[in-house]
Image (cartoon, rainbow, N blue to C red; front, side, top):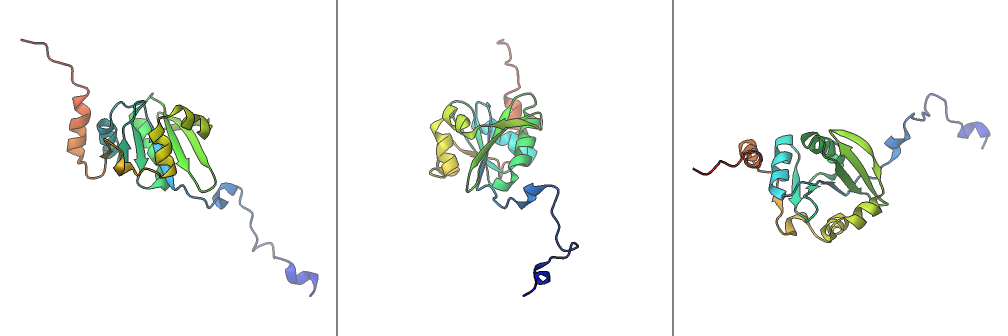
Length: 167
């Protein structure tokens, strides 16, 4: 063998400018953590935004577990845009690691240590992330899938109505 047998011509070997495309680990679980008090309003907001989730209630806020874990950033953008100034956290699990990012008004504003997010979260959060509890098996879960836009808007408007004064 000669040295020129191992030479790769320049036109066949390309090093991309952005090496993130070489990361072949796709998330197996993705969820958006919110301060929304109930599962039903968050499921309605996700239905309006076209985000397919199962929303699990918790005592610190509703957790939207994505049905398509690869849609995490798009879902976090859509949910944070709907909730406007309220921050949400996208938590993703990949085979080798977990990641957490903070979103406000449709923009990713930074990363968070996933261990800190889990440590400050409810027990169901870790169970969902590790897959020891399926979203459908958690108490009070509400799905955005199958929720009509009309019904979703009714659910959302219920929370905005001012109480009528007694007559």
